[in-house]
Image: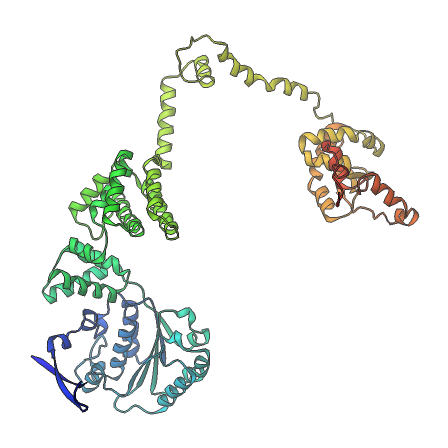
Length: 601
């Protein structure tokens, strides 16, 4: 019943040390957690990784086994367990007799591996033995032939923790290992493994398990162990595990200790710290009914319960996701028929678009609330906004409403005068119907008509039969700029101050900017089409504008070197052809630099 452990304790009055027996219960020493007791022993026991187990079984059966494997994936999905099963299947004496290939777990080799006394299988922790010296010892061990089995299997767990020097020393051995060696590397962070290592092995990606797969496996464990478990409680455990079967088994072990063999949904929520359905239903009901008067009582309930608002937002997202499944007519995993009926009644008139918008808002608030010094205030402000949200309308419903409204107008058309009066006036008021204000919108509506008549004389001139002369174009350049102002004000500003005509040969018009630079050249090329339209409207002649580069004013600098400073002084430091002066003259600006106080005064 009890085990005795010898403990040497010093006595106060005596100098010698004596051995005192310490009684320790056997049942406490022999207990194993569910994650260890239910560790897979065969390929068929691995949950949710059939694409990997089947490949490995066929490789062994067809004698196409590679010399190196890389198992990657999140925590608790079976990487190390699959590596151990593969090691036993390689060296099992009866594996070739079982189809599909499985280790028998009964021969001497399999029993030695299960009891961790097999010398041909080395399992190494990459986080502990990560240095170059450790890798050299591993390679020395790999050169030795197997003792009992046909292959020596070396499993390196958490291989991404090896140092750069260790990886470099491992490259040659991993590329061309001895024929009797198989390397199995396992990691959760495959991006930290060098590409030179990944290219020398076969990579297998273990995927996270779905909630349904985890809940089903937990149900099998509960049935075998003799525990009564509600399906909703198992789904809560599966969702909390987030794809890790080992985490789910650990949570189940914890819940069983709390529930004493009878696992209920309410007690599971207490252990996991999740919120009750009452809180989630109440929050959804307040948003669906736009019940702003019920918010203070709901906020007080959350405060008295000491609610963690980040957890509440995560639970609301999951709850509203189930509502989307229900609205789409899909099966909601982990919820009974009664819960689905209650969920349907809680969401009320909310549609799928409303639920998507609420999920998006809750996810955004969850990210923001992590950095807030007052999560409660942020959550309450968000709830006040969510309660006042308008209902979303899908494109399909909007089209249907437009069609129905169009049909109604066709069946009962209104008089034109009545429609005009209703469109220009405000909603009905006690003011008398005949009011000058009713005609005021009509006057404002007709106001643009004189502007149209004033623009009427600037119609395109009749297309001319004689070729356009360069002198005629020079004389009408101001009119061209005025018409260009109506097409593009920016082009008109450049035409007034920066563009000049070089030549006109037939329809080919060459124009260049007065100032050098890429900006002026690109502006001319950009607005060349607008300039062609303006010239056509004024002169009736069709031209094709070609831009050419500006001429550098080097000759002026040589002849009159002293004239430039005087011009700069007269214009505030700017030359007459400068873009600054052009903008000033175009928009009527004033240079205020001369009015500013000089430094030191």
